[in-house]
Structures are given as C-alpha cells and as structure tokens.
Image 1 (cartoon, helix red, strand yellow):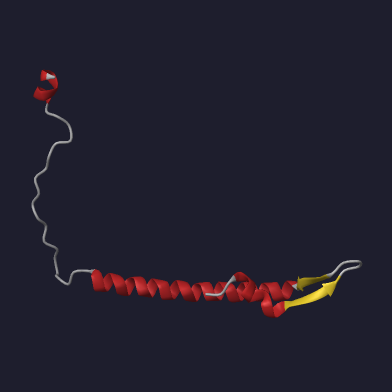
Image 2 (tube, helix red, strand yellow):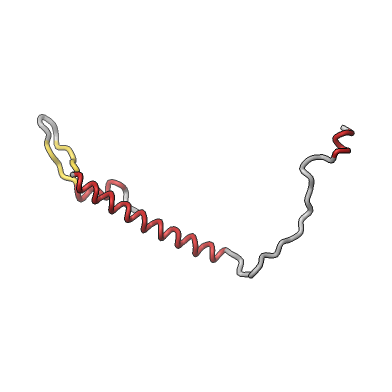
Length: 87
C-alpha cells in the first residue's frame, strides 16, 4: 500500500515565492487525480481484504451440515431465595 505522499510525488513541482526559498506546489487537478487514484487503490485493497476474510472463514468453518449442541448445566447467577433469607 502506498503512503499518501507517494500519490502526490509525480505531480509536485517547485515554485519560488518572492524573497523565499523554493516550495513544493501541487495543482488542484493533480491533487484531484491523486485522490481519485488513492480511492481506487483503497477499493482494490478493500476487495482483496474482504476476499481473504471470506476464504479464511470458509477454511475455519466446520464442514458439518448442522452444528451439534452440547447440553450444559445452567447455574443460577444469584443465590436462591432461601439462601438470601438465611444470610
């Protein structure tokens, strides 16, 4: 994946302002093109990431038709009424 500065690198030129050193300048159109390219790359990476996640989910998911549920003992979260009164 590119860094943000890499999208603008080919579009930058240097301009001299009065009594100042050279400064990097990007035109509005060049900035829009760089932004569109970055968004297109983001969509591509999003597609690749989602595809990889789907493949991973398929690999991890059990291949049986119906999951087997085991019976577990259900324990109360609070003490019974008799135990509360005894305390």
